[in-house]
View 1 (cartoon, helix red, strand yellow):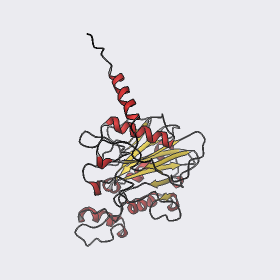
View 2: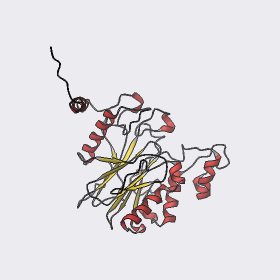
View 3: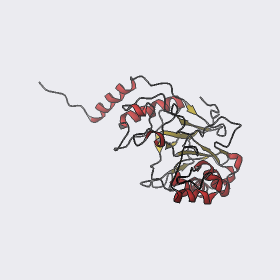
View 4: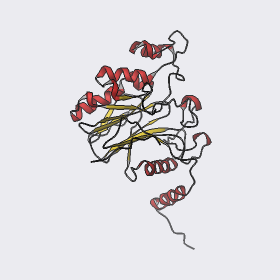
Length: 293
């Protein structure tokens, strides 16, 4: 008896169809900044509403690697479910290639092997940055209609990734820095992030308020505040930054380590951790969703 050989695409389609039928663990919740609106559509994912093969990653894990976490097929299905909920399905997602550095890629130019920031002026292109304690940063310019996304942990913060992203927007698309709006997504807060004194001292040099207990063996570090300070020094207006200092808007900069029911966290969960992401795209016209769901 002959056995029919199936192509790789047929096998992949069968796996995808099977995964689509699996029930979600909870409902997808998306955090959105009320500073970002108009033709811009965006959000920050949380941990519920997806599928996972690993209990600690339950359930909307957005990242896969050979060393840990869910298989690529499961992550692709989670991204599909998020895309359906967020409204960008079936557009492809351009996720930064994390290197914990300060390189930024402008779409249209040759793509680097690694980069932690991505910018574009193209409509309908979905860009995204992961985060599981590291900050997913989203940038919009409603005047010149340019967007950016970046992944910044404490290393990227010290390297100036946030302003490197803004400066790339300015260099490639002639924007004005004062027009840029920045939303800092869920990430580990000063309450839970500690570093050795050598690296904490670098944050202290940005501003003493970034390290409230510099005298400790492992001081606490506020990388969100450091990001705000560096952005403001670079020319971004204080009122154009949405972070945990903003109290008159729904919060998007929640501590990932503190809120185990809502977020993955490397600090809290150890090496087998899941990942959230911030995503952003721009339409020709639109009224960007300003709600927190």
